[in-house]
Length: 632
Image (tube, rainbow, N blue to C red; front, side, top):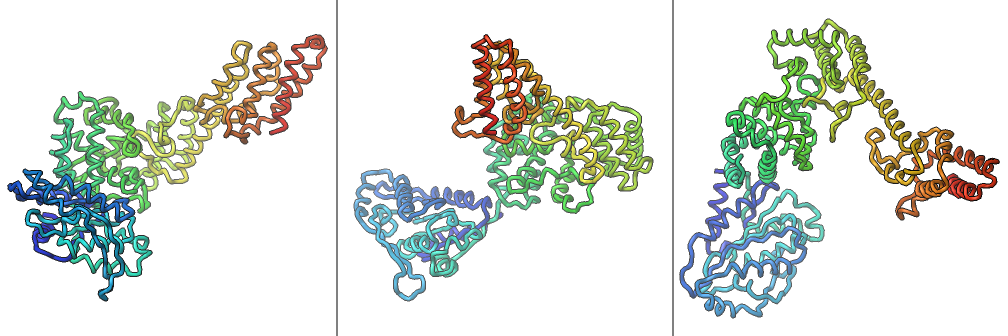
């Protein structure tokens, strides 16, 4: 059993008379150090219960040093731990025993260089900790002190070890230190006149490295599951162990969180799936394995895990041919290819942000249940390296013929098929057409595709990454990128036209009855602009003369209201204290110049000579326009 030798040694250590040294348990974060020691604490705490009412029994005391910056904080933590951990059947006797420890002093000193002189000491007025120094026969139990997270303590390490050494040398305590020792660097000892090994050697007599006890930890994790999926997880225990082992992460905390989040994810799935037990077990097995792979990699800093099983059939870039250790898991447990199950970015969206909507939709419509659409020929050809010769030949002929003779394709299908054909041409497996012919045909199809309704999914682009739960073949080639650029250019023109229509609709339809609605309309987000409307050069898109005529058709009251809107637009500091003129507003200066000229002409027009209020309203509006021009 993992760590069994360490456990045997510690059992001997805590029962020995006076070892006069401490033991260090080291290991990486998440290796299970805390889990390991807590299991031992439970054993030591319940080893033999003292029955006599006149006695007090000491329990092991565990303290995390994470974030502690002063020795007084450790003392307060010890005080808080000691009180509830002392007990007997006769509390009055316990009280009598404790009286002798009040108002005593704990002296802390440390002779680093063994010259017989103290290199530092401090006296702290203290009460119950003196129990550890006592030889009172009424106090039973091994005096075990465990200090965890040493590397996270903010006290200089030489000072911390000096404090702990007093318990080792003078209190006959069995002290166990727990640390990710590799994380102890110069910042922990920068104020010390001694190197870390010097004062470590003074107090630490034995060091053990804790290795993840995967099987025991997984048993604990699975027993903590409360939902109906528990039986499926227990049945997949070997799969979990295998996936964790080949990951080489050795971080049980991340694994525990992965199991917790997987349980949470499947709590959102359609409960009808459970009714088909055979398929549900298959569903859980497949999703569990891939979920663990993605979670373990992503949570330990590898955001590139989304490329797993995505480019292996097409790329010659060795950097992309990773994760072969996980392919062993896929093969051993006969898992479906991940691209038949989920879209990587949707799974990552759940792992990273907890957003389960998209990934749950994919789970609920899993191919395992044969729900929804059937797999198309080009999708099957995407896996061409896994096909037998007959299937490959038939599928390639079907896909190629369809691509060059029919037109019923979605834009993402055009890109997928083009990428597959590019990869097969590069592999000398497709010779009927050249890359130039594929590009020409793809552009013909893209032109005829209704791109006006195209919209990327939230979180990633279907044009640049992929779709249909698959990355594009040949996505990094010049030929493929030219098709993406061609598509993006068409989409950009469509967006510009749509955004122009949206802005025209707002400003060319101003009437006396809706002028006040301008504020609300320009604060809305527009998908085609990719922004809130007022955060774009919205007025620069208008025809100045046409817009001037719209304004001049308004009545006097509406002109005054429009004046306030212009002030809101170009004097934002009057509305928002932290907002100033931006570049998108400066781009509207030319339109304002034309408006100012047109309104000036209207103000001086013969028809308005006798219209005192009309002229006043026009002058007021033109003044704020002139002031706006000046500041732009």
